[in-house]
Image 1: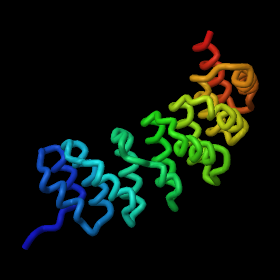
Image 2 (image 1 turned 135 degrees about the vertical axis):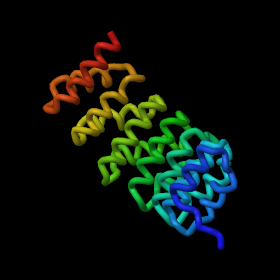
Image 3 (image 1 turned 60 degrees about the horizontal axis):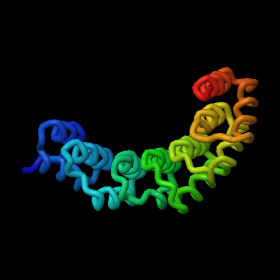
Image 4 (image 1 turned 180 degrees about the vertical axis):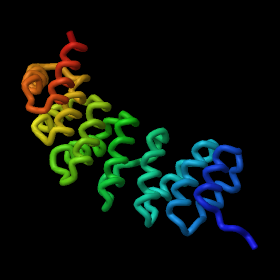
Length: 197
């Protein structure tokens, strides 16, 4: 009788070079095992873009979220559809990964700007702002500046996201942040101003 793979056995496979066991984990009915299998396959340099694309539409948000995270180093995988995922944690991870891609393709920029300015979930807005800062395209300046008036964690991230940009509007946003009621926002602004001087 074959013993079904477990998260532990699949994780170990990723450290022992057992690609077969990692592949078996991907076929599991347990989403946690499938998500672990993705990480094991990545560690073994056996995670293909095609497998990631399949994982990004898995029924389980846990698997989709892990796939989006791993896609950060797979630049050929299109993460834009994930920005409309029903689960905000998947959207957050996909936004972060797109920041790692540093791609300023129009669909990427348009969706990230939309999320940065209007996503209902604060963590999604924060991740989108961070991604826009990492990408560094001037098309994002207005959205990032707008985010400097959001919740404290988003404001802090927005100030940091202004680092690649320059101009009067950026300078004004940083100056405002120096007087923010949240000390971490003020500190981020001070650090940024010091780095730019």
